[in-house]
Length: 159
Image 1: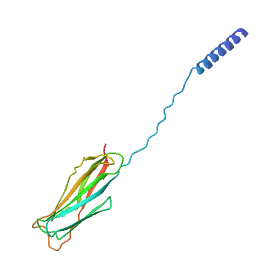
Image 2 (image 1 turned 30 degrees about the vertical axis):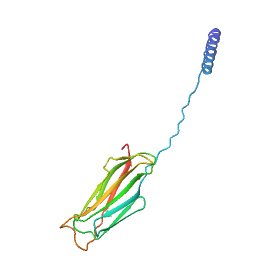
Image 3 (image 1 turned 90 degrees about the horizontal axis):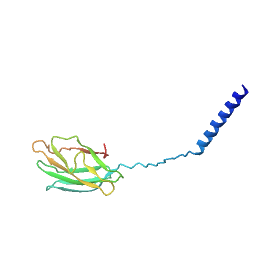
Image 4 (image 1 turned 45 degrees about the vertical axis):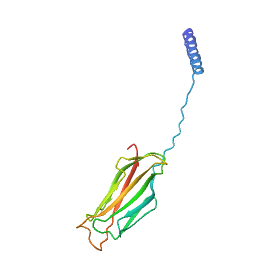
């Protein structure tokens, strides 16, 4: 019995020695990473307005909002404001939506120069947006006030 015990002990020591030997022949590799996310930002960078005779038009921007004020509008009269929409972020931006709200029947409001899906590259990228307002004959009421909002939704380019 003693011989079996010594044999078992020798076997355990031999296997233990092999384990230590295998441990000496191992290596570990690591992969480390760092990620910084980009920014999505767009704003109005400039504007210019024109109008038919007697119509007064003004556009004021604060970067995120362009406020167009039109005075002395008359049937068949047209006022146009050209705005520069700049991508001031670090990733490409895409036009996700263009909504005119409300769209009064007395005014024909067109937004040109961009469409849903238009992509604007970062930093130096910009697109010219033209908002044209035309007084509809038979609908435009004398001495009335009309208000509208054009909302341009900008989303990340890969959506």
